[in-house]
Image (tube, rainbow, N blue to C red):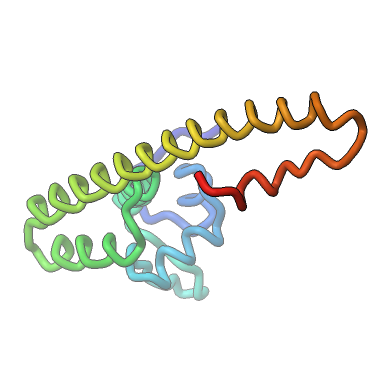
Length: 142
């Protein structure tokens, strides 16, 4: 396995391999203006060496919930010489808030499903091979 070489342009396949993504992913990022490539004389995409770091930033941001559209906005500011740090921080705080809401919703569903399983077990134990009406539990008033 070759080590990373961050001092020369990278072909799509090299960038993809070093970043641990597919070449389709690299092209997708380029189409969505997250990466910029130049064409070689032969027409191949050539990415600047820092594109490897950019792909890793993209992957990390996507992993914690940033969207492609949000990253487009951030990188647009960044690539034009701006400093989107406060924007990134605000987006990160929004992501955390969304995750906390999702966690609470999942905890509620978890409790509800546990209670439902207890009811279903009681219905099954008294059904004696007949239909137990498990889903009908959801139709009853709570």
